[in-house]
Image (cartoon, rainbow, N blue to C red; front, side, top):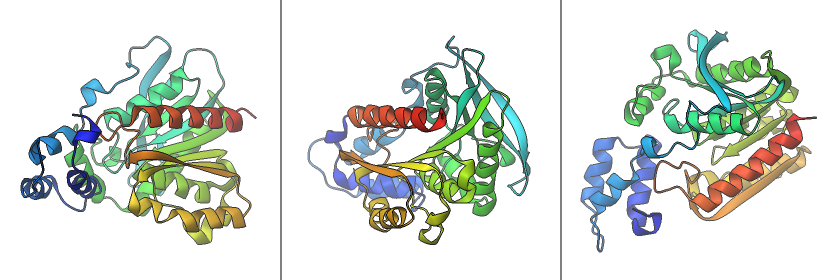
Length: 294
C-alpha cells in the first residue's frame, strides 16, 4: 500500500505507537474505531508495520564488504560491555568511520542494512545494539521497544558515546568519525555532538530531538540535520536549535523534505519516501566524505 493511500489519522496513531505512547493493542483498537473512505483503516494499519525481508539494499554476503559482530568495553554504560555490528569496506584502509544509531527499538535489520550501505560507500561502519546488555534486539520491534524503555537512558547514551570512541580508534579507522541515527538515534546524534566535542567530526541526525540548548556551545562537529515536513513534535524544536547553532558558530546545515513524514528514510514501511530518502542519503554521504577525510 502506498503512502498516499493511508489516512492521516492512521499515520498519527502509528506515530504514537512508534514512539511508545501507546502499545500495539491500543494502536489497533484505536484504528478499529476510525471511519475512513475506501480501504479499511485496519488494512492501512497492517500495511504500516515494517517488512524487513523486502527492505534490504545490501546483503551481508555482498563481496564489497565484510560484516561481523564485535564486543568492546563500555564503562559507565548499561553493563560495562557493548556489542555492535561492524561492517568493513573492501580494501586495506584506513577508512573514515561512521557510527549508525538505531531507533527506539534496538538494532533491527533496517539499521544493519544502513551500516552495510555505508561500508559499500567506503566507510568503516559500526551499528551498536543498545539492547545488547539485556539480550540484544529480540527479532521484532514491539519487544525491542519495550526492552529499550526499561534501560537507564543516561547509561544507554553512554553506551553510544563509548561506541563512537571504539570505532574512531579502531585499527582500520583514519581517526575521524561521524555519527548518524534515526528518531531516537537522531536525538542521540545531537547528544553525542555536545558530549564528544572535538572527538566527533560530523553528525547527521534524522528527525531526532534537538541538542540541549545550553550545551550547543560544546559542539565542535559539523552538523547536517534532516527533517520530515510533517513531523510536528520534532520540528517544533528546530527554531531554538538553529538559533543556538548560529549563536555558537557551529558549522551546520538543515534540510526539510517536502511531503515526508517522520521515518521517511526507513524503507521497510509505507512512510518511506524513495526520492527524499535518496536525496538525504546522497547529501549525508557527501557531507561525511568532506568532513571525515581531512
